[in-house]
Amino acid sequence: MVKDKDYLFKAITEKISQTDFVGFPFYYPPIFVWHKAKPEEIKTAWKRTINKGIEKVGMYIHLPFCLSRCFFCRFPAHQIKNSAQIDNYLNLLEKEVKFYSKIFKSVSFRSLYVGGGTPSLLNQTQLKRFFEIIYSYFDFKKCIQVVFETNPNTLSYEKLKLLKKYKVSRLNMGVQTFDDKLMKKWGRSSSRNSVYKSYQEARKAGVKYINFDIMCGLPGQTLKSFRETMKEVIKLSPDVVHVNPFFPNPLTGFSQQGKRLSKKEMEKREEMNDLGRQMLLSAGYKFLQFEDLGKKDEARNIQIADTIEHNSPFLGLGMAAMSHISGWGNYLNFPDLEKYKRGILENKSPAYLQCKYRNKIEEIRWYIMNSLRYYLLPKKRIYKLFGEDIDKVLKEEIEYLVRRNKIINRPAYLQSKVSNFGAYLIFSKYFYSKEIVKNCQKKLEPIKKRKKIISNEELKYTPL
Image (cartoon, rainbow, N blue to C red; front, side, top):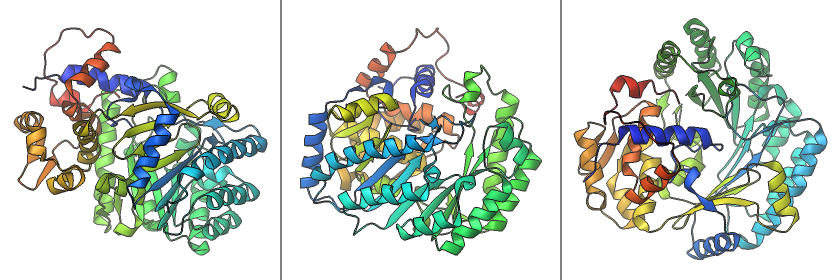
């Protein structure tokens, strides 16, 4: 029987926020209980998966350099000192690419996502070399989407034409806000003018889809400032818009200065988040499946959609890159640049940690926690992917969460009733197996005895 463990799962969630350096806070099991990577085991797992004749395989590549470190950022990135750093990194990346190209020689990748960091920092010569490395060693004939992350301040029309030439079909622009004073305060180099210029030039260059990332709830951000930003977003009319609430985990510069959001600031963050979504819906945007708000499904992030809908694998390359091998598990590369470099130069794998599913039910648990955050999960999809009846294999967990009014259980689907991200991170942990919960507890400080249930107020304003 499932017991109430709100405070334990809150403690596990806080531990994840302290150790999640790659942006996967909903991964199961959490990264802090993963094991040392075994490169030969990973290699064998990839070969076994590829030999099954999989069709939808994605690739993620991490380019970990930025002009400056934004105070709100928690991702693994380094402030660039000189252009030679990028050249040296491309040398390392090429060695890793060569290693995997032998394993993936029979695979045609369906998607390519280039993230960071700030990939658009690369100059034109470096961009050419980067894409030529990737396209020379891997097959992308069946690729239907190439996504490239950018900071508007690092783009030029020449770069955009080059990205278009190398088949970039979706540009992710880190806009964050049109309030220049706020951006300067938070250490970001882009500006309102650079966003307008880059957006117009990207359209002129023929990039098919453009996504805007917008932040809400930054300290110092006013409701008026946020509303004005959203008005300008709607005026420009990008294809997809992500409104991202600011969750200052311990890896952000904000938290490292000993700061925390007050309850009032978290309330304002929720108000901005709701306002942004309502403004977009009123302007004709809609919720896209496995995405945020956009105009049409073709503009979605195909790699995420494939992983959620089809449990498709993806190969991660570069420092701190995550990989998912369907039917086996997940692993990630060293998040430290020097260790990543050492692993490659010593002809070893740069893989750092791994978590292998003990059985099919453990993979289903991972899949549910990734999928249910998009609110609705068809049961026939679970059966098609895993051959299991979710109402039987996770009966107790589902009945418990229905009693707590956190999910809806219908004959055809499960649906999350938890809209707040922090609350979802806590309640989704009721799908954790007893063994994983015990493993997590071993890594935690002793939890003071408190009541079992967390109030809705505490949940809504969990200071992650």
